[in-house]
Amino acid sequence: MRSEVTELVREDGRVRGVRYRTEDGELHELRADLTVACDGRWSLARAQAALAPKELPVPIDTWWFRLPRKPDDNVTALTPVVRARRFVLVIPREGFLQIAYFGRKGSDAQLRERGVESFRREIADTVPWLADRVDELASMDDVKHLDIRLNRLDRWHADGLLCIGDAAHAMSPIGGVGINLAVQDAVATATLLARPLSQGDVTAGTLAGVRRRRLAPTIAVQNLQQVLHRAVLKPILDGKRQGPPKPVVALMKAIPAASFVPAYLIGVGLRPEHAPEFARRAAVRGATP
Ligand SMILES: Cc1cc2nc3c(=O)[nH]c(=O)nc-3n(C[C@H](O)[C@H](O)[C@H](O)COP(=O)(O)OP(=O)(O)OC[C@H]3O[C@@H](n4cnc5c(N)ncnc54)[C@H](O)[C@@H]3O)c2cc1C
Image 1 (cartoon, rainbow, N blue to C red):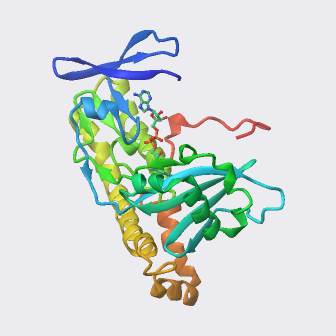
Image 2: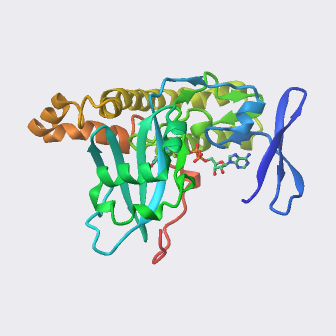
Image 3: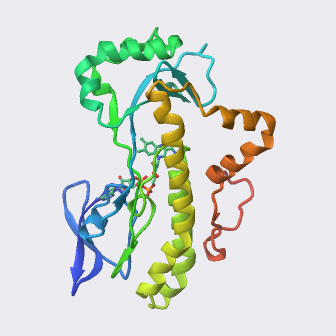
């Protein structure tokens, strides 16, 4: 914890661990039979192993900021708001509201050029009950731009290294499902590799097994996210629609149980993973989970 990997240790073309810097600035080396790169969508380990992900087109970006939450705010759950080509998500957190503003990819410079006053107005126009507090945004420095990426590696491993989670396949925030996939990758990795690792028998084939197991659910969710970008978010930002496509809304109204399909894909996924027996702790009476 609180350490930053600065480079991979390589010997004879094989990854043998990492060099890292601790909080006090000291450099260390950690050697390992296998290095698992779970360092996210800008993975340094992946880049140093010369693994390059294939980018999928993404038409949108997001900007995040916080505003104060007041006791009489009538918001208890994640609330999407669509109005006049704008899409804003209000997420109630303890003591504050976390807000995501969606816009066209590549429009960060324009948004900043228009300035904080214009941004405050846009937010107040879209979500009128926030008008009493948009002044809390002192400048555009309070609004963080997050570049949405959707990509995937063809090969998730190199000799001595395995990429999982966003390092292997960056996910969009749409559906709030990237964390599920990253955790499922980790569980699958433990399930498939614990025994070969303990026996010193990890081959390229064993590492490739993690990708084989996780590829289909990854592709399914990324495809679903692409459909949602194109069919829901982009038309809203282009002013062509005020919400999800009408046939989808009609289907959900006619057959409410149909909403089970996207909910299952997002919440559980195509390939749920279960902690292997050796990784389970015995339940302790009275312990908080
Ligand atoms: C704007 C945005 C919002 C999102 N919202 C959601 C959401 O609500 N729900 C959801 O499920 N998914 C969401 N996603 C997707 C989700 O964030 C990712 O899919 C998920 O976090 C991937 O998990 P991960 O563990 O692979 O990577 P990360 O969560 O990115 O974790 C990587 C970790 O590695 C660390 N790290 C990186 N480099 C180094 C280094 N050199 N040395 C040491 N440590 C390092 C980082 O500090 C970080 O802790 C969102 C994505 C974006 C872009």
